[in-house]
Length: 247
Image 1 (cartoon, rainbow, N blue to C red):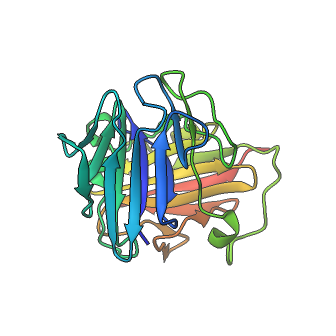
Image 2 (cartoon, rainbow, N blue to C red):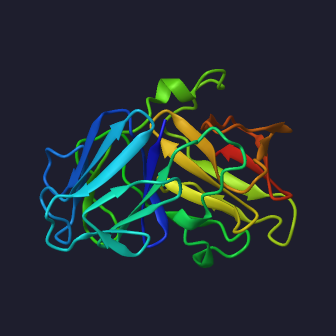
């Protein structure tokens, strides 16, 4: 099933599964994907999915809709197309089940130093309107049901315990990073990148970039988000790190 990866200034904000025939994008709250920013028109664009095809159509927006840097009125979306709406980008992905799928274009990897674990605030989960993005805008999107991602996951950690990553090998061995933000990016751009998201019911790690997937306790992850347990050992691009819950 196709999906969109919403980002701004190189920071991944949300994942939206295109499971409806018609998905509207715009500033007003009655859109399926609401981006509360003055550069976005009230009803900016629409994506229509028919069988295996997805059609993007600009809705006479003030600032226009761009795909891969070119202005469009109507466009048949292809895998890896990047839709640009003001400062926001929507990366269109069709076959998300392939392990070799790379999403390097959707992340501004130049902003990520190798194993410079950069925290990035993102929209909170499952709320109608989420304030607090970098430019003061708000974003409301649909998200994958958490229950679909938690099969076989460890017991839920207490909500009052903060997650921490400690690097065990490599140049940053001994470094600790508190996972206090909604989204934290880890890895080496161009080789392997993963994100850890903080949710009300736990911490989840998801593969983002690279042909090989990270491992947790020696087990290679798949394309789905994986909930982390206390003292799990993560390996990303050859660097080992431990996830634990702060007491």
